[in-house]
Amino acid sequence: MKKQDSGSNPKLSAKTTVAASPALKELFKDGICDLYWAENHLVKNLPKMMASATSPALKGAIESHLTETKGHVARLEQVFELLGEKPIAKKCDAMEGLSKEGESIIEETEAGTATRDVGIILASQKVEHYEIASYGGLFQLATTLGLTEIADLLEQTLAEEKLADTKLTDIAESEINYEAAEEA
Image (tube, rainbow, N blue to C red; front, side, top):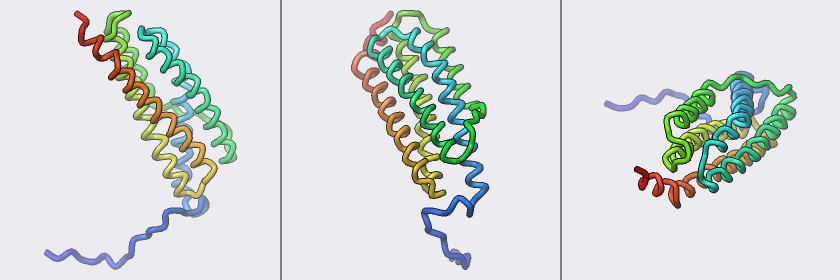
């Protein structure tokens, strides 16, 4: 069967104006509010993860990410300012769920073990992957909407989230996974 031509040409423009797409801008702002809640939640949650970790390398990675996360909150506040909006947090159900999962891992594993550290890394990487997806998508939307300054801010955070994920992988592969495999 031959595919029929719809008669319309695809629109290949990569950018639009903010005024041209108010619904898309609202979706974008909603995503920013969601991430603002998520990052603030992490600022409160990361110290618990750090306190539960045993590996000095893992504790250091979490501490470093906590410092970066505080910077992410400040960067999102800059985004709100560039949008002409007050910072508003919208509860992020995904981050709340990922945090609860991390808390469950801590409760279900023995303190002081590499196994618990492996669980903390797994939970942390799920958070990182959520953040990477969120910042990546919002970076693309900002670019599409022609919000260049905002796109630059989101791209900076996206790069930091990717580095944090890589650091966690390196810690797991270089020591913790092997230590956990040797535990009784």
